Image (cartoon, rainbow, N blue to C red; front, top):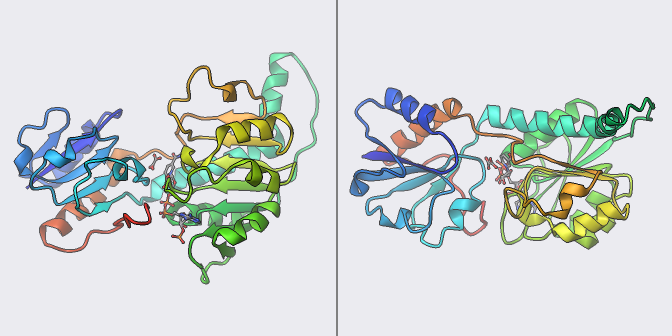
Length: 306
Ligand code: NDP
Ligand code: OXD
């Protein structure tokens, strides 16, 4: 049984050599030079090209290189095999750090100080108060972000699809609870996956429900933001500020109006990046389970889309 790494846009050498060391004797094929399609039973994928996975006659499972699986589930020729994903401590830690950094940047107005420095301007600013935080999506990553902020004294409310009675921070669920959750928050953070239900969830109406002094952070997926509506909300002071790490089109096109907004922080989808050396043991475990006929960890529900 061979493993194929079908990964676009990232150097996979660390993963390839780590898997070779951990699984001596197992063939590791690397796209685009897949040498024996019939031997491939397990694929690790990221931005897999269309019409490739369906050419693997003996494929048994696919693992996303990241936490998100939207790129895989969107493939028109996706074979009917289990799709699992990465859940990993370092990835989660990065996300906690990123979110905290953006909240502190907003609270202490560091972006404004940067602009002032460019103009040789010495001018003190009042810190902005952020007390209440709404986290939309309290799954594997969102829950840890919620715990991190909760432990720092923020009032955290988590929003999800299903009830979470066991959490120490307050939790609500379902679309009916969304408006009140965002209306009560100084900061709204999305860690939602890209699904049919989250498409264009953050629209004009949503931003109007937020408080005018509030910060919006999207580190989930770009599908959920109606970009024109967010642009208008930031232009006209419907909300104070936003931070986006994910976009409908990535890279964000050069001519996109977002680039010109002074109250928007843009980062190029780097909030949490899978470090390949950290996931080798998880891929090996998936592989061994597959070989011995056991159910893989972190299988996604194709109907739900995450
Ligand atoms: P999980 O699948 O563990 O969690 C998803 C959460 O979203 C769950 O709490 C789920 O609710 C909730 N959810 C999904 N759909 C809805 C909906 N329609 N309404 C309300 N809640 C919903 O995912 P992870 O926490 O591991 O990752 C979250 C996302 O973060 C990834 O899918 C990816 O898109 C993004 N990500 C971004 C990165 C970046 O660098 N920007 C890096 C890593 C991940 P429930 O618990 O009830 O099922
Ligand atoms: C992920 C990502 O899903 O990098 O892991 O966005």
